[in-house]
Image (tube, rainbow, N blue to C red; front, side, top):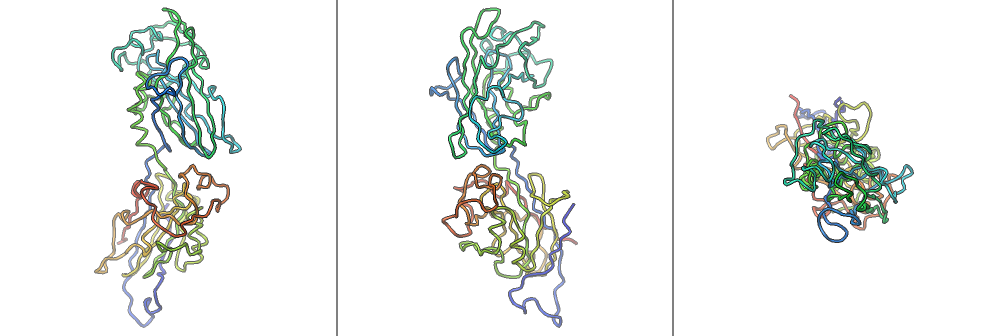
Length: 446
């Protein structure tokens, strides 16, 4: 539901600016303000690893490996896909939840995680005897050569497979084909290693024994709470490029798809809003935080302190349709109404939830609610909103740094920023436009 909050008290530069009972007042207008979280991303980061540790590109044969280095925080997992090169459309991958990178106590995980990896059928091509069938990886003459699978769903493969022609094929144990390890290097840095441990006698076929090959790897970092980033068991391939990996070891299409889905899909915190006639009530660019409560919004989304310090301000803390206060995640929005008179402006601040101390905000002097003729303003005002750094805490990688919103243990955790001033976040520090995160609209109510 929409917030019923009504901001009707404007902050005035002087008592005369507000007028008195003996002076005529302009008729107020009422506006609906909507701040929508429009972030489109479903994973934090992703990439294709086509180079082996040897420095050569291509599939990994026996004794060869791929290594992927990345940073990750608590509550996050890594997923990947790499083709079993001797198959039609089989690939190694963790389950849909990925491989968690921290344990339940928040400690980083290191060691052999191969038991969390399975072999999957992409459901895109008929299954022939691995290393033998004319449409399998070693023998096909075109990357997509092969008839469609009669079962078009992604599904796990057991130790014994019924091939499309009805014959049985006994697969080697996964641990006899690949070994997957995690190594923690400190400061949220991990290395994921996928090594081909097969031998010339690992896979038994009708034409003799064979080793296996593992294709270049597509990997993605995502929240444990957001699974199924590459596939959903029991459903058809998403058409984003997994088929090209599973059939030909080609990562390019899925890498492009995942790049479009990769980013800091930050929640936005409850916000503090104020209607005023002049001045910069919440913050001034180039000046230190005033110590009135902006720091608490920017670092932990706590609006109470600044609300107490700013007369006529109000807290908006329940997303549309929600029954409890909380942040607005992608797809959610805050909505509230304000009552104002010509000359009034609107200021607000809401935390970039996965940061140390960033917030989305209006220009320091606020958004105009009326035009030069005294007519109410309406429409999309997102281009007037900026991403600010409160200057109270050192900046770390969003969502991953130990002192960012989702990773910190206490609301004020983090080292002091040596640049003690409110400022816009430069593109060199974070290049995504504000419009990829939020949409702000103002609608006069007739």
